[in-house]
Structure formats: C-alpha cells, structure tokens
View (cartoon, rainbow, N blue to C red):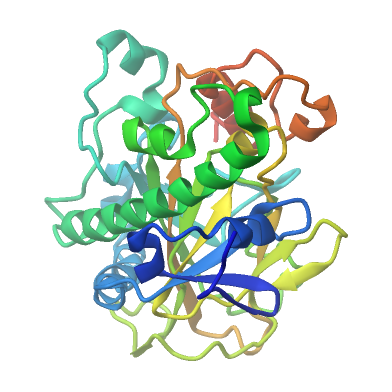
Length: 363
C-alpha cells in the first residue's frame, strides 16, 4: 500500500481530493484514520467550489435562527419526530438536560421526496417523508442546503471507495456482500443533512465542559461529512451578523474527539476542507475494522462568548432503513457493541433505538 500525498497534523490524516478522484490506493491512510489506533476522522483538502458553497449556506443558519419564533414554528415537523425542518429544544444534550443552545434544520440533501414504497414512508417517517422547506418565508435555504449537501455526499463516495478497498483487502470473503460502504451510500434514499446553529451564550450560566454545546456521542450512520464551522458576532436580536466568519475568540471551544486511549483531542477543520467521521453502522458491518469515535462540541467561555454564535453543516450518510447490519463471520461481539445496536437489527431498528436516546417525542 502506498500513501504519497497524505499528511497528518496533530495526528489527523489529511487526503488530497485529486488523489481520491484518481483512485490512488490510500488504504494506509484509511487504516491510520479509521483503524483501531485512529481517531475515526480524516480531512479532505482541495475540493473544488467548497469555499463558495460554505459561504453560501452557513450564514443562512444565523439568518434563519434570527427569524421570529412564529415563523420558525411553521417548519417544526412533529410527525417525523423533528427529523425534518426546524428543531430547537427537543434534543437531550445529556440525561435530564434539553439542548436550548442549539437549533438545527434537517432535510434530505439529495431527494425532496425519496422514491420508496408508501408503506416504508409510513413505517419510517423520520427518514422517508418529503423535505420541509421554508420557501414562503426563507427561499434562499433550499438551493444552498442542497448544493453543499450534494457536494459533501459526492466526496463521501470517494472516501467510502477507499474504505471498501482497505476493508476488502483485510477481510476478504468474511465480508458480507452487502457491506460495501460506497454501495450503501450511493443507493441510499435516507441520507440526512443538518444545518446547525449554536446560539450565543450571553450570561455566565453554563459550565464550559467539553460537551456544553453538543453532548458526547458517536454517529449511528455509516459516514458523516462535516463542514468547517463559521462564527458570527451580532448584537442580541439582530437579523444579520455584524461580522461573520470571524476567528474563534476562545481557543478551547470547538469540536473534540475522544481517542481510543480516552484522550480528548480538539480537531480544527480548515475552511477549505471537509472532515469525514466513521459511524457506528460502518463499525458493525466491518467487524470493528473501521471504528467510530465519540465526539462533542465545547462552547465558548464567558465573556468571550458574548454575542458570538456558531453555524455548521453535517451530512449523515447511512443505509436505507430496511438494510440489515451484519457483522463479518467470526467477529468478536465486543467489536460491534456500539450505541443502541442489537444483533439482528435493520438500520431502521438501530436508528429508531438511537433516536429515542436523544429526543423526547413529547417535548
């Protein structure tokens, strides 16, 4: 295996987009990022058009969150358990504590109305209902959301092809025929994107723990794409930020991952790059060869937090809900003991059990 372009900064593997497109063998880098000693995350640089797409979407997180509550409430989608449209205060940050510091807009970045049987829509409304767009009140969101979301899925397919090459070489015939990560993502009608907005904390009332802006968790899907965050400076109630894409005023704030040894390590995604995290479903179907990593977001400390908010965008690439999650033959059960997973589950079963841990359907 060769690795002639990858570089690592603070132990984060960095891949060149051009090499992914060429199909160069980057298996050694996949092993270093996602294997037993990796951090479950890598970065891809040199993606054409990414900077412009990021600039086109992330400020919309600020602008939508600044709309009156009666406008935003039109796009709260209870039937999907808040898995489409606007959500705020429904997610459990940690046991007994609902997340009032973060709002998000969910939709499928690829398909406004996935082509699946009506029975599946009824069974899995959280994934297969049509998208909810605020076109009447905020028409800019749909094109910007879909353009960046589709770009992130396209790059994710290139990363997933490298994962398949590495896994197949290691597992051979032990690998289930339906375990291809690239096929899973390419054929899925259930990918979900989330435009996140973290509200400014203007009072010194919240402990600045590692998980004060987003609790520790591992993603339950196959592969998650992360866009570099954008910070804003604005007076309370302002419809537009006074300044945007500003430097982070608190160097300890931001995304953290927990390594295999238990170390908490901050990860900085450069503005012209995307990060890709392995999810629990990929860990299951590869028998732990690819491993998910817990991660959290630490809030800004007061008084640096005053009037400073944050927006980012994540795309969760995951199987269709009826796909079974099968570990390779002979896998140690400990390797697939992740999250809410139980052997025999479909992805839909797994997703629903996971979702129940983080959302209160009666809130």
